[in-house]
Length: 373
Image (cartoon, rainbow, N blue to C red; front, side, top):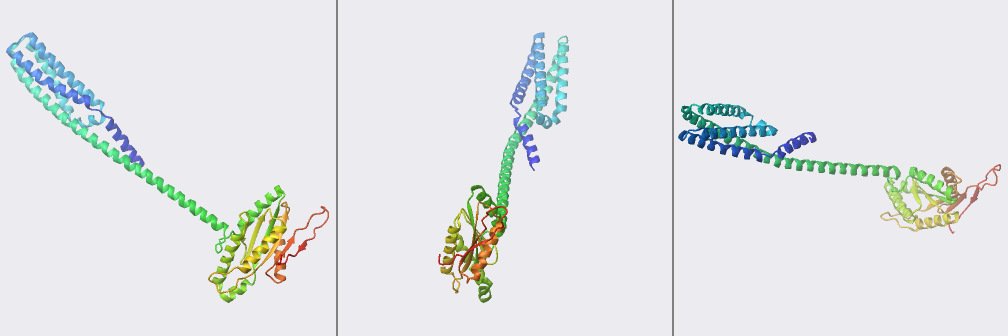
């Protein structure tokens, strides 16, 4: 479509650039030469002499010049030339008659009796010339109207092309925007848990890797909290999985509200959550964990006629990025198991071993933190 419209625009521009003003002026002047020639031949009939015949010859020569000029101008306009092609025979015939007429004038200089036939020939040539030029004027006028119509159509074509371009741009923009939103949505689905809207384990691992790298660079502590809802299976078995899902959503919302912007909260299992806390010491992590435990214990579940569940929390802290995420997770998971084993609804911590020398083995140091901190 663009190629077709482009070709049409180019063709129309060629038409629009054509100027027929000079041609129409030449036609008008040529038409004026005809009655002057006829007047000269009448005067020569009444008073035949060499001067009158030269006057007649002059107007014949002038008519030939106008004819040749008109033909040359027509040839310079491609679209006009094809539009008046059917008049080529008339132009050739008029040119031949003007040449014959010129010869007759030369002959009449020595034979005065040829003046009268010359007058009749001039009359016939004048009528032929006038008819041809009138037809040519009508053709030029028609082509000029077509030219104006072509310009109007060009304006419409350009407007349509502009609308198509704008529409295509808008469509492309909407498609890109849709793909961008779809990509963001797919990316969000890859990083988040569908039920709670929290980050999933995959994203947590990626964030933890970056956080450990930063902790190693800045020699800062990094704490990890594992939270598990106590007796959650009992909730599902007693009230059904829809109620259990709602409990997960409300507890997730509460945990998100209590977390710091710098923390990363993720759901990593059925009823298990992980909170990654950069630049957080063990003492600060224990205090934050106990605050979370108490908030969950005292929260009211909306639309659910059951008492609020409790959570058990395991805490660990790595210093300077010396341990991997899997190692920290293992210590926090052991601490969480200890919290479950000591009655649930409590906080326990287990710290990684402190290196004394490269040759010595490491022994885990267990630090229990009760819920009354």
